[in-house]
Every structure is written in C-alpha cells, then in structure tokens.
Image 1 (tube, one colour):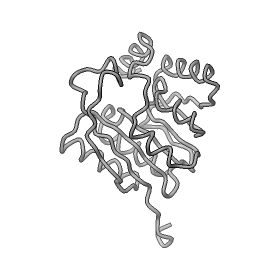
Image 2 (cartoon, helix red, strand yellow; image 1 turned 90 degrees about the vertical axis):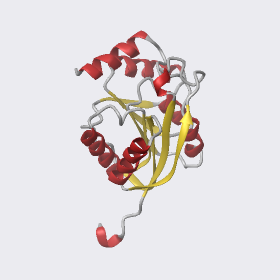
Image 3 (cartoon, one colour; image 1 turned 60 degrees about the horizontal axis):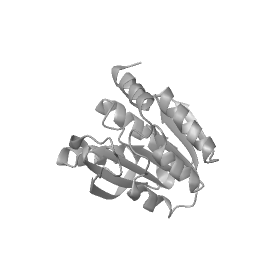
Image 4 (cartoon, helix red, strand yellow; image 1 turned 60 degrees about the vertical axis):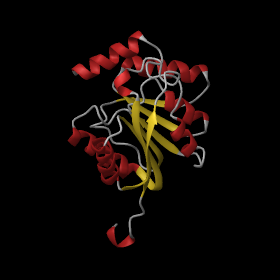
Length: 198
C-alpha cells in the first residue's frame, strides 16, 4: 500500500464520516434531474455521495482503496437498506462498467499523478453513456485547478456544463483543513459520438 493509501486507511479507521456526511449539494441538484441508472463513485470513501445516490434509486458502484472506508460504507448501506457495490481498487487502474448514467469523482483527481488522473477520466468517459453526467470536485479554485478540470472532462469526452467555486463550510465537513475551504465543483456531459466516428 502506498503512503497516500496508508494515510487514507488511517483516516477512515480513526473517524467515521471523515469528509462529512452530506453529499455535495451541486451533485444532488444535478442527480435528481436524471432518471436513475448505473453510477460509479470514484474514491467514494465512506459513502457520503454513494448513499445519497442509492437513496435516489441509482445502482451505485463505489471504488476506493481503503478497506476501512468500504467496511463503514457497507455497514451504513445495510443500516439504511440500500444496495451498493463496493470495489477495492486504485482509480488509475479501475475500468468502470459500460452504460453509466452518472460518474462522481469528488476530491480524488488531485491525488494521483496528473497522467494517472487523465487516464482514469478517459476510462470513465468510456463507460459513460451519451448524455451521461460526470461530476467532479477538486480542492482550490484557481486557473490551474480549472485547467485540470477542463482537461479531465476533455479526456472523458465531456463538455463542461458548469464550473463553480464552492466555499465549503465546517457544517458540511467538520474536519476540513483551512487550506481546503474552496473547491472547484464542475459538471460535464458525455458528448454524442457522431456515427461516422464509431
């Protein structure tokens, strides 16, 4: 296990809801407009997004490297009578199932090396159905961060629908370090591939 992996394993072992219990409001506002279908939550951890999406009727696969997080997610899903599929994997090597209606990557794409994040975004795009939604958040709101988001969407074959600066409150994420108060939150839509290019 890498140093980063050990850090997350320790974080999830020490504290339930290390990143808060609430799903991102921007994600939920977008998700309620979709008919339920297959979804993947990359780096989903203890399940703040996956549980909310499952409650909306999505068939959610949660990908994370932390055994502790996936155990907590499973316990919470059983307590809420929600069906989720936990997958222990590094997002850089994960290949999502086809026919995804929604992909979520909250606070994960800044962790791997840039080429690995772009590779993961490309894989997500390959699983997204046309008009499927891709939601992501990354720490900070700067030209560089927005450039990364734009590049990730381009790799996934998505057009950017919106990109906002969200100031995260302690109510949302009680353990939030001060340096991560701002997040770039963005939504992209998988483009239709012209028949001539299929």
